[in-house]
Image (tube, rainbow, N blue to C red; front, top):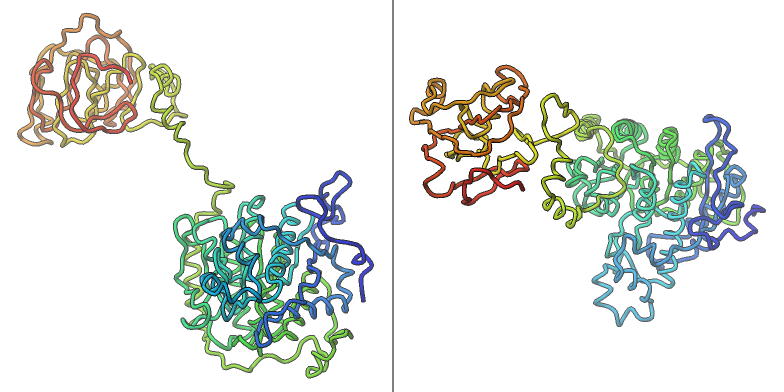
Length: 613
């Protein structure tokens, strides 16, 4: 049974992304959907001859399961319900190297069963031993299944499909520079990276019995991808990762969810925890797209699995995710009893297209594989392994997941990538002239509204008359004297001649005052500060005083007024300081506050009028 449309070539043309080029040379949006209650638009990817590869005689991974699946999909007539079936072009080396190391891809490209004896040390370095053997046309196999996942991801990004299916993909164990767990190229990571070009946030859900360690590791440091894996975890079950408290690092903290389960979990328990965790995750993370890995080794009676899930129970997880209505990429994965794997993925294809199929399998050339089950789609698979999970253990997992999700402050940022700061831009900022700073920060004239400006604490720029290069820090414990002609702020003091006062507690609300006496009362300070605090006498000899200006205070008793002194007003902001005249003594030591509000260490000469930065 062959679909007519399949007789034509469905390989990619010269278009960079799609084979279904529109009249203008690009993929055109579909218009068949009239309302959101219509059936979803489903694209189906089956790389030509992808099921003909062979890992080895006794190896549990059998790509032939893909051929069985495709035969049942066509036998049920699901190809008529699928919008388009594709034979995608293989991924290029450049596309594979979007995630994988160049040396590793070059190795896969060159190694063969014939030359592997001479490359033994290299093979071991890339972990292509035992679980990941070298077989004929290995590199072509990797390019084909990765090409299907990339094609589906690009189709979703273009908005020309709602659901993309690639049962040949989903190999979630491969790392950046080595093979692992029957997986050589991590097509899931490649597909998610492609989707991140368009979708701000991607949720990855894994229902394989093995932990999706390769995908988790790839996105362990980002908040744009949340990984959620449901798997068996005992500490020694492959790959040995996926604890509940694995949490992510840096920006990816709390964006890594693991649901560790024990042997024998059945449909009811699995559905309970799956629906609870996924619904909470979608609500908190608000994904723009979802990638669902449907490893069928979580079914009962699997050669390497130990769960008691039925085909219907496994498919219910797929249907639950589909109902969110989010762009969805569905991939295969594990599964080592190939007759059950093909049944499962055929049934889930029917779920995704929204069609109910008969429990009787259609007649195909592969009927001999299903003799023992009387050619049924849903054979009995449950009850083979004792269930070691308890309601209490599942509740503890749910509480742990909810606790992690509680840390998420809404959806994360949607920036496409983090751009490092420009060093030249930073240097240019430091070299700005006084006029440029005045233009940026404003002049601080009375009556101005600066709601849109953000300035450092106690920092007010006064243009060419700003003399605060020797500003006193806000700390009341720093021993600093205020030379003539500098601005004092940040401390508790009274006004003196020769300096402009601001920032002190009780600063004036409007007009500043001038003082000619050096013995201003310090009783308030004596009551609150150290007993040894003294005051200094500073007089002003300025020949050309700064122009008087009317200031505006922020409020009575608030502690930081915006008062501007008129005439030759001055203030001291001393805290446990030794009085000293500005005309004598060594340069001021200790930290000084710069124009930008920071501090700088080291001596500097105190002048009557500081030079603007």
